[in-house]
Image: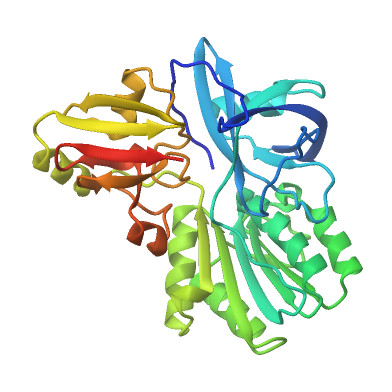
Length: 366
């Protein structure tokens, strides 16, 4: 996940704070454009679920920048937590982390978050289908390692799209896992710009390749099929639609979107429905703050303008760092993709994409 927002506040790294400081232990170059950054274990140890992400906070050019990167490690396998960061054209933070971070460097992060996770049990007999492209492999890698070590009767099938051979992140590690768990991990690489000597699948991942992959895995191994999708918007939409057409229920599919959704007409509709300043009360870490939200502002933006140190990361409605529970009043959410149906039913909202619909709104942020 790769996002940006500026905050005026220093970070409180107390036990109740969502922030902590991690020391870089090791840097591993996965491909010419991707680097894994391993951190020393803090005290107490960093608790996280495979598939979750860390929000990295760095100061560049006099501004605080935040980006969220998935943990590519597994707490069941790897002694040290790590994120894998791929360079982007014009990517401010991703390029900085790839070029300037060295062992011994200390980095402020937000504690692990995210719902792209799995429940593991030694008695499970599942057939997992992982569909990823590019850096979408990072959370999938942590989940895959965790399944293989925790569920001896389960099988993992991976369809992984990359640009070229030297761009396959974790290529060697995936091969090692296949040898370590024979018959339990099947990997299908799909390269969009392969060399002439590449013997595998060529071209982008298509509906046809997803259909072939899903039908093949469901005909073999355990009958209970679960799918994990991670990558660009186009792939996510294509995979979701293809799996749906195969009769695979939405409860069998979990997805993680790495990119900010484009602005839609919903935003202008929300602005028209909230033309006046609205009063909002936030309860954060035992403190109560009351402020006004002007038309055109989200609850998070207005809170940051008041120098309230509200947690946030993507400001896109995807990461859930700014999640709060609506106690009273009504809001309009432009984007709620980061929340589960159960969370929405319980009254949770995302402050980064919510705008007041009524007055006297009260929100608790845990």
